[in-house]
Amino acid sequence: MNRAAYPRWNRAVNAARRHLASGDRERGANPVELAVMMPLILVLLFASIQVAAVFLARSTALNAAQSGVNAQRTYQAGNGAGVDSASRFLKAAGGWLVGWDKAGPTCATTATEVTCTVSGRSLSVVPGVDFAVQETAHGTVERLTPP
Image (tube, rainbow, N blue to C red; front, top):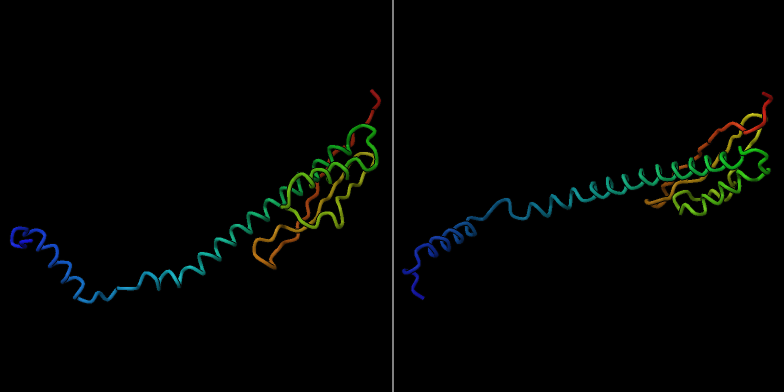
């Protein structure tokens, strides 16, 4: 191969050689920067996932409590209708709310109002980190009133 016949190629090769021979001072900086930043990135990632898990646990608990209120407030509902409905909801909702079955959902009924409370703990994404969750829903009891 005659290098004189390819002047552009010669210039590119010479430029690459000069660049490599000059001893780039920034060489290897990217892996060091990544090693310094990666723990922070991972902490932020897992923290955001944990926050999302807490909000999903709260939403699950509130929806279960509302399901219990809706079942218990109907006209002439049985004594455990609200607790049964909330428990069925929590069993079907998945594992976002853990430990709810220890205390179980509770429903209190007065002459005019039903209150259901669901409590548990959020799913833990980071080991050892979970949050207590308690949600309460209220509703009026359906009843016959004189005209």
